[in-house]
Length: 439
Ligand SMILES: Cc1cc2nc3c(=O)[nH]c(=O)nc-3n(C[C@H](O)[C@H](O)[C@H](O)COP(=O)(O)OP(=O)(O)OC[C@H]3O[C@@H](n4cnc5c(N)ncnc54)[C@H](O)[C@@H]3O)c2cc1C
Image (tube, rainbow, N blue to C red; front, side, top):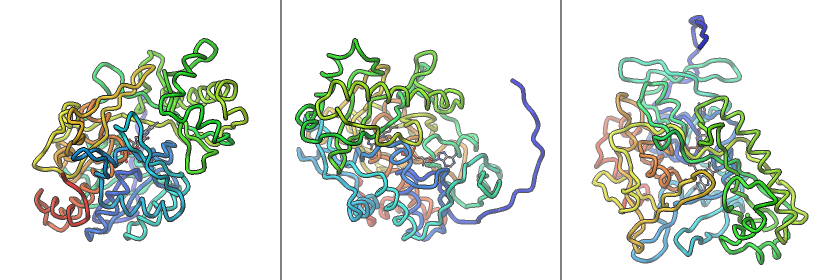
């Protein structure tokens, strides 16, 4: 490997705050609002010019993991600051009614991406969070076992952000990685959950499409019949209408590297090649839809997500790693910060495998505070899909619902730390006061 030595330089300090949150996905949104509400001067750094993370930049368009079964009834189990965000999206006319799937074992809620982006701006600004867009975190300055500053590349040049507490909600654990926190990648055998490029389909004849593939798995049978004539990246697809029924979202691409393993989102070359391959698969899938699926004869690509959707990359090693068994067995923890109700959803080569909670009447597990606490660094918390989880546990708690829970807890805890009032009991009391359901 060739290297070169960069010259040392003086870096301008952009801001000095109490809490700096990296990343504006579900975890970062909930963290920033909760930290600000807890009285901390809070700045959120985001590389794009909008918020939402994979939910907008990855084209996901769907909240999973908010609802689950308790006492035999499906109900909303993730509550707290997320309720305000949902209300704001709904007020903009961008939130669908909940939809059930997989024989009533899951309930999801889709949304329109522009409404999510606008609602998220208001959500953060009204809580007093400062926003720094178009800023890519590029490193940290350490002071012993504390992060003294986050270094960001902005359109004005390189800048430093000083904070007492940092929350890594980057999805890829960038900040924690810069700070030397140990992490794991994938399933331990070279692969991870496969990524997908999401896209939306416009100009669908809604009634005919619903009649043909309205049932959750009906599209899979049509794909199977046509398999010899098209190159499908995986068996089956998730095709669902948006609020405007002429617009459907498609979750069907699957991105492998040259070895056939999931693209490694921490590898710049693999990630770059994946962008091209995702678009190629979309063009091929549209050829299938137009020719073979009733209602899609005149359909067009409505939008391709700005980036490959990454389900899993670095997962930090923290005080506790959430396991697949915790999800299946409905684990309970004394240091609960909230609930995960999404099943294990493994995107394997060519297929999706589901793993549901054994207790079908109470199909949820608690999430422990310790999964947010990284090893070796004193003033960083890690929330969202890069928190401390094993591969299988992450396949469940990575859904938006679990990320909102982790974010709210991390932001609340960071504010309590700044105020010198942190204890697990104080965190749990503050979360309950803010409407969270700790189970
Ligand atoms: C294809 C696909 C389909 C999915 N389907 C669903 C679904 O239907 N329902 C559901 O609930 N979940 C779904 N998920 C999962 C869910 O969207 C993600 O797991 C969730 O968004 C993770 O939230 P997060 O806040 O941890 O991270 P992310 O949403 O990944 O947000 C991280 C944010 O940090 C920013 N960032 C990262 N690094 C830097 C840096 N160095 N500098 C500055 N900013 C940075 C990113 O731009 C991003 O905005 C899906 C995911 C994918 C990829």
